Amino acid sequence: MGRIIAYIAAAIFIFFGVLFIWATFNPQGQPIWLVVGVISVLIGFGLIVLVSRRAASSQLGGNNVTLKIDLPGNVNMDTLKCKSCGGTLSPDNIAMVAGAPVVTCPFCHTTYQLTEEPKW
Image (cartoon, rainbow, N blue to C red; front, side, top):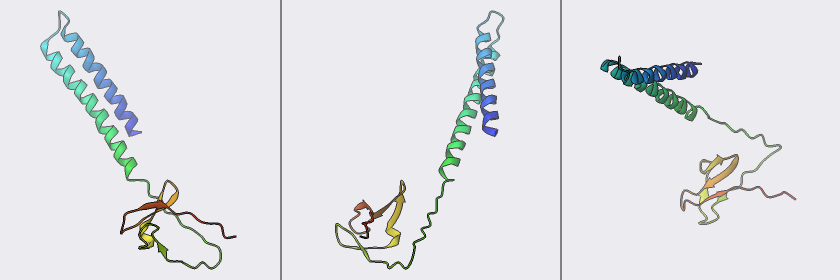
């Protein structure tokens, strides 16, 4: 709601700023109107920049996703080894990227997607 009000206020500042600048060049215009018009336009664009940056920064930090997996039955953990160098991988080396588990080797920095092979 605050963003909408700020955008409306910015539009009003820009509108009246342009009117003041335009009126300066009228035969009855005064030079001070040019200053008032330029300041109004700058305030309007400043509001737009301020609101858009605040909206962008609030979107960046607010999306934390926690993935919990419920495995049926007893599950044994095998040791994961890097396909390239054979280094031992830990759960800290696994991350979810675009909904798929991806592992990055801390030794050779190879990155690949984990796949589950069928049990049969």
